[in-house]
Amino acid sequence: MFNDRELWKKIASGDASAFDSWYQETAPRLRVFLRHLLTNEQAAEDAMQETFTQIWKRPQGFDPERGSLRGYLFGVARRQAAEWLRKQKPANAIDFDLPTDCRIETDSMVAQVFGRLTLEQRTLLWLREVEGQSYDELAAILDIPVGTVRSRLFAAREALRAAWRGSPEVTGRSV
Amino acid sequence: MKCDSVGEFVSALCDGEVIPRDAAEHIGTCPACQARLRDYLDMGVELRRVASLESAESVPARDWSKPQGRFARWWQKGWGTMRIPRVAFVSMFLVIMGLAASLLVVKVGAHSDGTVVLLSTMGPKGPLYDCPLSTFENHQECSWFGDVGSQHLAYKVEVLSREGNRVQLAIRTRIFHPGDLLDAFTRDTDSAAVVKQVWFEPGEPLKFDVPEVGAFTLTGVWMDHVPFNMGTPSRDFSADAGEIRMIDVLLLKDKALAGDTAGLSDSINSEDNPNEAMGIYVPGEGRFLLYQLPMKGAVEAYVNLGRITFEEGGHSWEFVAGAPIAREHRVWVLHQPDFKLVIFGRVSGTTQFANVKLVQSSPGVWEPKKMTN
Image: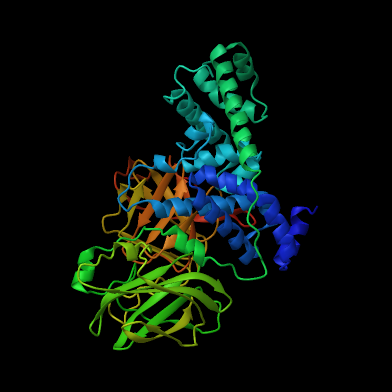
């Protein structure tokens, strides 16, 4: 088990074996993150692969002084997701709702309405609740001040709560 | 204390943060806030449960010692973001995506660290077109539609990847006949298209045959920026090194028009004034500071010719300018939503430039020297 600095020294020197171990360890969770960001299985797979390819080819992009390797990984993935979403938008698109036919199939109502949040809200909530990223790490990933993280997390939780409580499928259920 | 003012602290409580005493006391006695807290906790638990179920799936093995085969994924995607009107084919005019018709070449050599490869295609009847493709971003491409001899040809070149001084290209060709539609070709889903995947090294001509048309030759050079010329080869419209140039700018917020400099233009150059950031004041939206280096609280933005795109504050933003903005592909944008530009004691009601000096508050951290609001 290496710390970030030791691991990155190996990766930056072209140690494919070290990078592959890191890929095997982190890729499954990254793919789930991207799946819920993009709500599109193939796009998530592509973005996940592109993320690792980009990091492998540009090891100078990570600076251990600026944050954790894990945070850097999710930050690169978030930009890949944003780029993919940007390219999917028709030139005259106005609303940012995702098409309903690419929502993830799951038995979880929370996970289903999660896709209605903005990209930033999905990123913040997922990285905080699932990946356990600290406020400092979230600030670095999203390039926002630490103080802003708290207010945006609140806004994201409120948006998810409203979507969850307000979704027709939930109405009348005891949840 | 009201529930609305405590909401943010309920959220912070979920994250293990210490909150003010009066907020904690209110939450302890307020059923509504406690219900909100339970919902937040339930949502977190549910997201982690879903993640646990999905994270068990393994990922495909990859060989990191070899160039990755991205072509299959590129093909599968069939992404159809580009749309070419059929009239373009009928009219047989030349189309180069995102670029002007002629290019001024500023070479940096076949063996260099340039990020842009300028491709030139020679067909059996003469030159087809020049196409600069950035290797900084994935899937840059150029398309051409027109007559070659007696055939109607559609031709597209896309950069798939880069390895050292060479690039991996996907070359797509398709002969069209009256009544054929271009849509599938432009979306990369045309099964009748001939697709070649090749490695190309600028400086080494590449020859290939297009069935029914003849022999083609691809040549190229590396460049340090995407060249741009408005059809007059003697005039280069590229931004200078270190320059951020904004000519006749529109600001789009979530794809809707939010600001318009109405003909005003501005330029800064880090080589002349390294501490100056470009400011664009938009009534109702505040000020946007643009700089080549990270500023405190700024977001990274993507520059592509005359556009700067970024996300900030839950919105998508896009500056659209009348000419290429910078040679760099990245700038940093600091949005100051509460800023108000005051001129002679009155808040300005028009979009205009309002540049500022920056200072380094700590090594590598830049911020505006003085906030005027």
